[in-house]
Amino acid sequence: MNKLMRSPQHREGPQSSSWGVLATTIFATLSALLTLGLSPSAGADEITADASAGQAKAAVCAACHGAQGVSPASAFPHLAGQQAHYLRKQITDIREGRRAVPQMAGLTDTLSDQDIADIAAYYAEQPANRGQAEPDAAKAGEVLYRAGSLERGIAACTACHGPRGEGIDSAGYPALAGQFPAYTITSLTAFRDGTRDNDPNDIMSSIAARMSDSDMQQVAEYLHGLR
Image 1 (cartoon, rainbow, N blue to C red):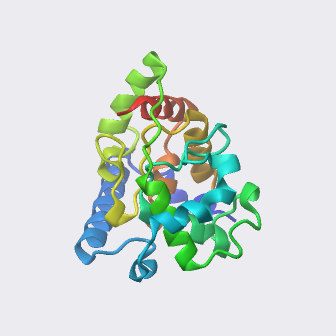
Image 2 (tube, rainbow, N blue to C red):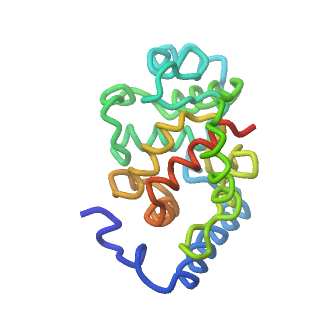
């Protein structure tokens, strides 16, 4: 049974109250992580990452994610310019079975923590992809990204992902700018339906549960062209 089924409060309750609880959770989590200097993958911070070594180790990733982390296909996310802490957590979660990605089955099994840190450091140093948004959808998406929706209890995305979609490395929050719209929608949908649940304190699951398909499409288009 997924988290959304176990936690009906994600969808119920007064809208203004639920937004307040969600906003409080986001800012409390962010504040704690930044104050303590932690990230969701904090245990790996003791490892000194080597981006040069990571380039060679990332060769197996190139078929899906591109030689420099800019993916040739929308089914696979761009990794170039992604925050290193976020990449460490996601690769580790896939290796440990906390995040299911069928396309990566077996690919992370033999990666050590050092390998993961090196690969993440390599991709973090690469120039991020920049896309072109569909104007009308992006205009509506910008409002939701920057201001959220008090009426529907959707917190602004900028709180965790920054005004330019650059993310916050020290807190493990990912960069989103330039990502394929299709991949962003797939990720949000997975958080909404509970097939992905490796987000700290259910933050993304709670937000996505309140988003419509149209909301996701509009935000994804805005992020694709964000610079």
